[in-house]
Structures are given as C-alpha cells and as structure tokens.
Length: 178
Ligand SMILES: [Cu+2]
Image (cartoon, rainbow, N blue to C red):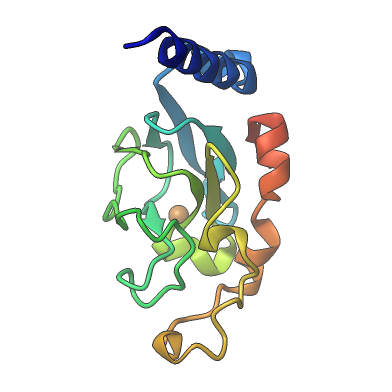
C-alpha cells in the first residue's frame, strides 16, 4: 500500500472512531431486551432505538411473554419495505421462553424497522440505524402509496407508527428507551 493510501485508510478509521459513541467501542454485540408486564398489556423492545456501525451484531433476548423479531419487508406477511434494499429480510420465529435469543449481524448501512408479529398492533416495534440514516426506513410510512408493485403491502398500524423513535434522535443519542 502506498503512503497516500495508508493515510487515507487511517483517516477513515479515525473519522469512524470519532463518530462512534464511546460505549459502542467496547462491544461487537449489542443487546436488546424483549419485555412484557405480567398481564401482557405492555410490551416493548428495550432499547427501542439503537445505533450501530456496519459489522456489529444485535442480540435480542426474550425476558417475558412470546415475541418475534421480524423485519419490515414484503417477504414477511406483505409488510412494507422498511430496511435497506440491499439487505436480506429476517424473521426470528417465535421466541417462546424467557432467555431465548436471536442474533443478526448488520452490514448494509441504513435504517432498519422491525416488529414483533403478535404485538405489532400493540405498538411493539423497533428501529436500528446502521451507520447512517438512509433507505426505505428513513421515508414516510406511506411512501409506497400509488406504486403498483406495492399494491398489496399492508399499512403500519397506528400504535406502531406512534412508537418509532426519530432516526435523528437515535443517531444523536446512540440508544433510546421508552
Ligand atoms: Cu411481542
């Protein structure tokens, strides 16, 4: 590698380190808990909003009740596309017992919205910002209206829309709990 390229690579690393909140530097795996009160009336992901760098992994841990971790993607029961176009959709399936975990590594930058299948209508959703605010997840909830290819996509329930944290806040604060 020539000196000029070395300097360029070093500069990129430095810029990345400065942008990254200090608490992120220690961990390649970031944890999100799946929570519920005993009656099941109040359910949520904690943190509901999380910033990570490309290459980092998220581990979702079920603490109570039965949940899924499912990407907003047409492959998942015709939900609208709200993850980067180049990213693979995912669905954890049911995490039935406390202590069950689901892990996923994120490489493609952008906003990733996801939901819990049994509790989406109750507003159990989460948002990841991987590196930057971009992609379908950064657009309004009804951005696909009038697109013939998206005619059979569902709408995001009102309770879920109301819960999503602002992506700019996630970028600013690193993580956001409700
Ligand atoms: Cu749930």
